[in-house]
Structures are given as structure tokens and as C-alpha cells.
Length: 132
Image (cartoon, helix red, strand yellow):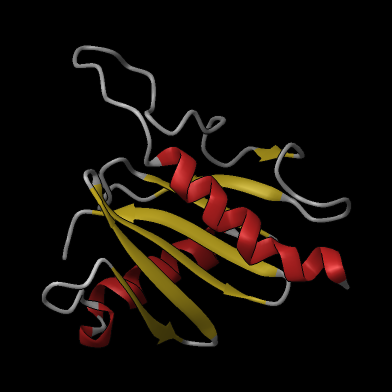
């Protein structure tokens, strides 16, 4: 049970690490160093839980990291978050939160956009949004 409780913490750490560093123009590598979209990895999730790197071309970079769910759930969460006025950053705030479906989402302003993590027990979805 402790492992499941750590999922949101792990996902937030992943988003924070993905937000660090600079970009290099003219390269074809992704800034977040995620595996190819749609692939499953075992490096960031507890035993028995799958991590997927998914794409959504509306995002820049277009990656969504899904732990314990599907790419469809990831895209649906991005759509819900982008459409919900309550998920916009209040003036002067660097951190904020809202609810999308059954997920609680936290946004953190970074130089590259808003690092977003939406989570509930056994599911975590992270992405970088340019809107604010």
C-alpha cells in the first residue's frame, strides 16, 4: 500500500526533473528523455505497475507519462485539464491545483511551461503544458 501512495510523489519528481536543463536547437531527441511513445518501461514504476510514454501533438513537447493507466487515459486527462478554467494558473501563483474527473491535478509554473501531474491511487499522469 505504501508503494501505491508513493506514485504521485514519483510522478511529481519525474516532472520536476523533466523541467530541468536547457534545450538544444536542431536536435531530434526529446528534452524529457522518455522512451519511444507507446512503449512500456519498468524504470520508474513499482513492481507490477506499468509506465507508458505517450504522445499528444497538442503539447510541446508532445509527451505524456502515464503510470498505471493507458495512453487513452492520458490524452483524456490532458483534454480535460486544458478545457477546465479552474485549472488555469491564478495571477501571481507558481503552484495551483484542480480536479479533472476523478484525478487531482497539480500545476507548477516552470520556464518551459506548466508541469502538470494528475493522480489518484494507482494512476498518475504527467505532462508539460504551454498554456497558463
